[in-house]
Amino acid sequence: MKIEHQILPRDEMRFEICPLKGKPNRKIGRQFELWSDKRGRVCGLIIKDYEELLDEFRSILSMNRSRERLADAIVSETSLKKDWLKPEEDNAWRNL
Image (cartoon, rainbow, N blue to C red; front, side, top):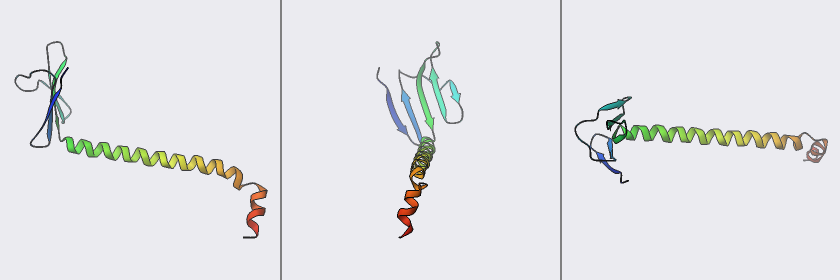
């Protein structure tokens, strides 16, 4: 299967899975329009404002990475705390 795509003016991207006729016959939200055949299979797709979608996606990825780093820090602190709370540690730091 060959999928062709093109970036259109006005911040739109169009994908063709098979030859398209006429205008899209289905809308999903405000950003997606698609062509479907009689059996409901998708033949083509237009994504409007795709740059905005990419920015949102990047933002979500960034937030997820920050959450992962925070979770790693919490786990590290929890495991290190076991050593920090030992009396031997207090004695070692007492003279510093």
